[in-house]
Amino acid sequence: MNRVAGEFPRIAVGKTRAHRRRLAGLHAKPPRVTQRIRIAVMNTRRELLVNQGKSGRFVSMMPRRVVVYSRQGCHLCDQAMQLLQEAGLKPEEVDIDQDPELVERFTTCVPVVEIDGRIRFRGRVNAVLLHRLLQADADRRSE
Image (cartoon, rainbow, N blue to C red; front, side):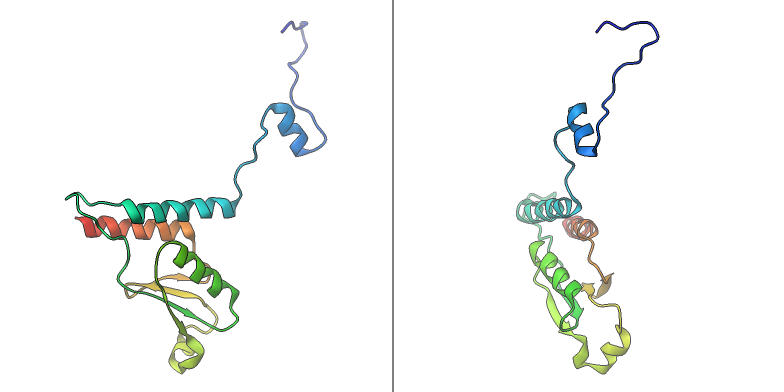
């Protein structure tokens, strides 16, 4: 490229972000957050199937007991159940409106996800954190 003294190299200048990306040679968009969550869940599911411990025998990444405290008509509860099932878990769903003690305990913060007797999520379930919890549980069991 021949440049005249004092001339700056040409950079991508366009009217829109997509146009600037095309000019710069960046055609592919980065994956959306939902796609990244799906990828994390798929990786978790794959590791559930092929994870082996140090002894060479199969080590289950499945926690012993998963309970989801929820309410009827709660969209976050539905999303949490779907995400847990996609991760290969079999959650037990408990409706808090049936028990006054649970209503008092979890009034506005549903869904509440309890894994092996410990409350791990309140409100939205984070797929990446769920993956890390399952991986840590598998590592602990394989030792």
